[in-house]
Amino acid sequence: MFTGIIQAMGKIVEVAPKGGDMRLTVATGKLPLENVQPGDSIAVNGVCLTAVELGAATFGADVSRETLSLTTLGKARPGTVVNLELAMTPSTRFGGHIVSGHVDGTGVIVAKWDDGRSVRFRIRVPGDLARYIAAKGSVCVDGISLTVNQVEGGAFEVNIVPHTLAETTLGIAAVGMEVNLEVDIIARYLERLLAYDRRQAPVDRELLQKTGFIEDQ
Image (tube, rainbow, N blue to C red; front, side):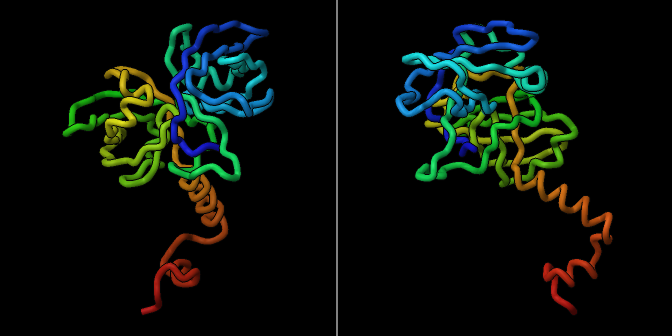
């Protein structure tokens, strides 16, 4: 589990095909590795990977076919700059939102413009993910916990402050770039719960009154 607060930018140094999938080696930059053990989780551009090899300032991780097909790691090359975050501990400050590291799909940056000292991005999302994204809700973009400013059709906008521009890959992101997206986990579970409820009883005024969401008139 992660919070979406990026701790360092790293760089992919090797991409090695391995038995039908891939082994990535990542240089970790300023990410602290002294307490990381083989088997620990590290988020790479929002993708939860298991560290299987550790160096002084690198780690290696295997990437499955599923992950390669659903995320931008399938197009990763040596030299690609990535956002990094270590998994949460019981004492971690919860600065972002609940991030599982299980990427739902990819989106595309379709517009970018200055907004005061910040930069505003518009990101187009696949149709099956758009319904999970709400204005003033949370979304994870390449591992970064962000607040959604506006939603319009199949696109949403986020405002990136100078600190985030300096400390994450959004500072070098360009229009046309593909990004990993993870929607708010609460939205996913809520949809599942509502789908189950609809099989039992319709979500109507009577049900909302019975469950205390609205008062009897």
